[in-house]
Image 1 (spheres, helix red, strand yellow):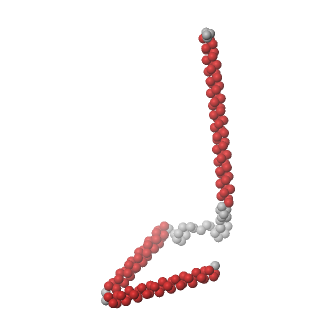
Image 2 (cartoon, helix red, strand yellow):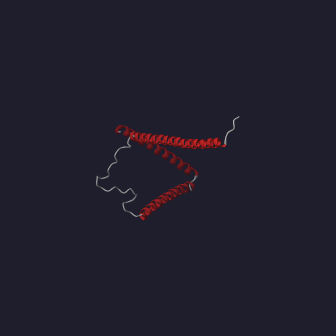
Image 3 (cartoon, rainbow, N blue to C red):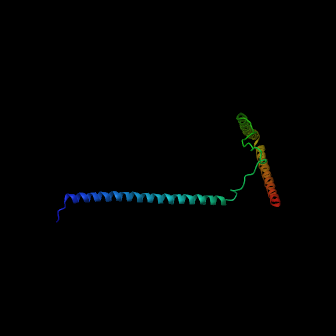
Length: 162
């Protein structure tokens, strides 16, 4: 075994430190290059996706048609709000309330009609009651057959003119 002098140990440590620093710098540079290549791949991928999206969206039928102009080139766009143009919200609210009220009245009317029909049946004698029920069945059947016939006739006319 040869004896190693402290000077040689010190020099070898210095050399090792220098190599380690150089290795560290090289390693950092390699990592930066790898990150840049990954970013480049990502941006290329995003660019390809964007291009594909524009190509596909341009091929959808009806997607690139120009919108119809309402009255002409220089006309104002129509008001898309319900009700008359420029009507305040309170008017629309009143119109809705009126429609709901009509519905409610119609329901009540149907209910009272059913009640009166039931009462009219209840106060009759059993023979008359049976006759009334039979008449109701017959009239429902005939009206159903009339509706069917009208529907068939209208379908024939549709086929003829369309």
